Length: 138
Image (tube, rainbow, N blue to C red; front, side):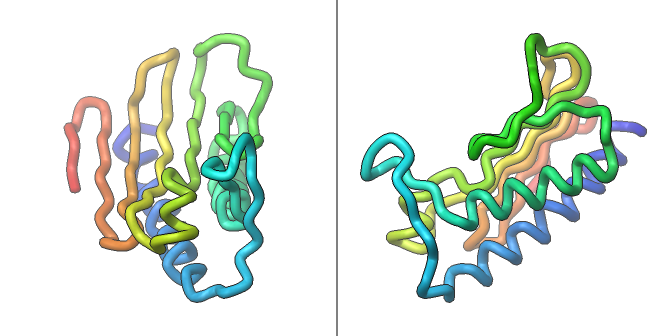
């Protein structure tokens, strides 16, 4: 599968994850935990969005490795092959307190080189995408 084809598939996931995050902002009973300190938070949505991406990756690319910020990861000893990096909510403190100024990020590396990446400015519904050999788009 080409990088462009992978990016088109992943873009669908990123859009769907953005919809889920926007919907979650009306949830008044959000479960919040501290990771290392009071400003390093994790929510049920961090874990849920990461699980969503992992499910999609495993379904379409079962041999790819995954490293997720919230604890989903394969045994990665080097950067060979395909590795997905997931940050389901970058800016969780902002997500919790401001309900704005956060994003969701996912990237694919092949043999240590970034080949597909997405940053989703969830509130503004702006997706920034980079694909090796094709450039960067919004």
